[in-house]
Image (tube, rainbow, N blue to C red; front, top):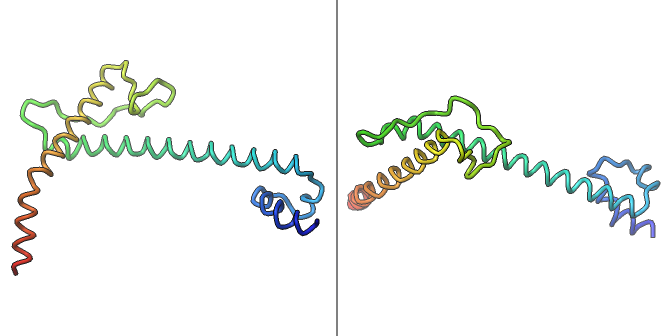
Length: 139
């Protein structure tokens, strides 16, 4: 029976910081509670990391729009601007933006325009890339 606990239960609690001696004072109910609490904490940590990575991506997209996007904007189009204030995380967001704020809606429009322009640019470059591939293959 001792082998069963050492091979089945102990590996579940060791990552939680439970010592070998402390393990033998626990019962299966306490072990399950600890494991469940640990798993929930890990899930919350992963959700937080995902949110931060998403936020980082939003800032990166804004930086691209404010630099490269301005290089390819059409005449008469408003220049893309990097946000002057950090994003707040406590409002209702659609794609990370507070859609009740006009400036945020404008940012969303700018992003869509930028992506459309990039797609058009790559579409226009496809024939050039194909021609270059053929030229390189011939040489």
